[in-house]
Amino acid sequence: MRSEFVNSPKPDETAAAVLQWLANEPDMLGRFLALSGVQPMQLRSALNDPGFLAGLLDFVMSHEPTLLEFCKVSEWKPEDVVAAWRHYSGPGLDSGQHE
Image (cartoon, rainbow, N blue to C red; front, side):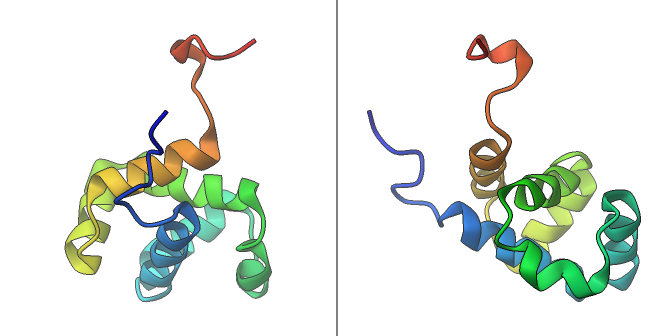
C-alpha cells in the first residue's frame, strides 16, 4: 500500500504551517482560539497533541475560503492540507472504516 505522504509534506509540517499562518492573521487566530478554547500561551505545547492538530486542521477545512486563503498566502496545496487533516482526524462515519 502506497503512503499518502510520499510526495507530500508530513502532516505535522502542514499543521505547523497552518498555525504559523494563523499567527499572522490576528482576526482568524482570535476566531480559532475562541472556538477551540485554547489559550495563546498553550499554542506551542499544543503542537505535540494530535487532538489539537486535528482541531487546527479541522478549523481550516471547515471553511473553504479559509482553506483557500491559507493555500494562496502560504503556497501550500489544498490536497496537502486535506491529507494532513485525514491523518489527524481519522476516518469519517461515512467511510465504512469505523468498527
